[in-house]
Length: 244
Image (cartoon, rainbow, N blue to C red; front, side):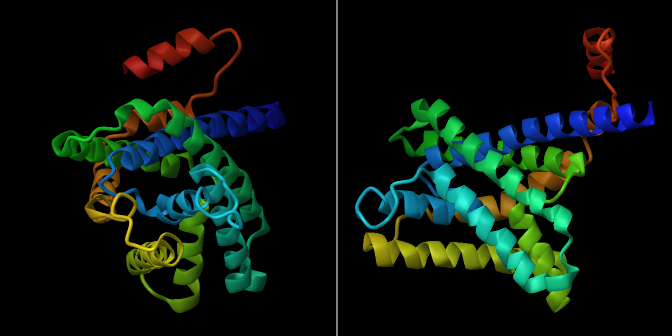
């Protein structure tokens, strides 16, 4: 019975994690569609995906495909940084990173209709994208599974350098954006403002604000996470829980 409860708990936790990842990637895709600058985590994959259409020697992968590769690099970097202190359960980040990339591509297809030439509309799309992304991150953190690869590399640097986590996060974000700009010049010949633009700077500040705000208003998600669905009471119990 205990083993059964553990399996149910683990399964339910990761179903909610997948939902959280979907919300996060929807936010990422919406930010891309704003054409004012993508979120930090997608700047380098966006540059590489754009370059892949112009150069035969660069794989013509999607943003999601390059995101999967970048997440794998993050995990390898964590192993090199932490060495014997690396917790091998964190290899599960590779699975999370894979689903994250696949869901980005799915949401990129679903948000094609959002592309606009109106600056005001694009600004509203950017705000919406960052809000959705922050909401998804807050849910993902609540799920309490292994960290996302982007967070994992920040934690690894924090442990080794002793930098406070917020400072380590800022430095990692700045490094990713700087590399995206560098790759833009090297591969595309110019700064790609629709990839790294004012929307990217806005996302670096605003997404964190949304996460902090949502952390105080996700009690319903805590109850949902604690819920243990049973075959006969699933529909009724879940509906009753959400109404609370």
